[in-house]
Image (tube, rainbow, N blue to C red; front, side):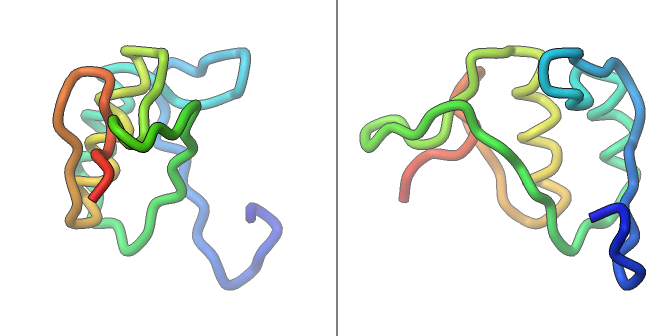
Length: 85
């Protein structure tokens, strides 16, 4: 996406998790809250029919929930990012 001239790719900073190069933690979420997002590409570690979209990392939960809030959707519990609807 960084090479696409019609897109603005923004990395909000914060701690970078070396395993997958994702921004994680409170600083990343805090900066993200300052943005109004049209769209967010959010990865997931697992999908469950009962629990929906989940992640094994508590450092990623706040960032993913914040990204959804900035686009008009929201998650619920600590490790449950987006419940199945």
